Length: 183
Image (spheres, rainbow, N blue to C red):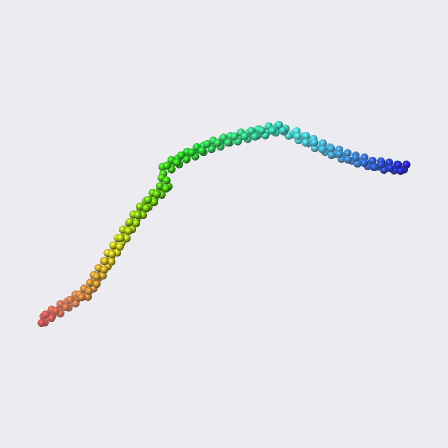
């Protein structure tokens, strides 16, 4: 009996410990359940503050609609501005075509300048040739004048060498007169 009492006592102690463990686990579970219950209540309270899916969808549709209307108006303004600029560009294109038609082309203007410069260059070449010819003629005349001057200078020196000055001539006359009176 002792043996049975020992076994049963051990079994009762064991069951008591298991029962205590179950009570502790249940208390833990109850505490966790209370915490989870509070969390669920908080979520329910938050959900009450949120809009429903239908309300949110209506808000988005309204915002997109307003945005689409604004973008549509902006696109219309851009189209009007584009049409205005296109008309101005077309007008300027017509004006520039008319201006180009009234002016000579670049090739025509270059040809005119080349012709003008060519004629001028030919005239300048003729003038230079005439000036060279005149310079050569003057050089020949100058050489002739120098030769003539040299001859005149030489003749003058000869005349001066053979000519007597006034006092020599007076001396000669006096000598001839003396000689004529003495004889």
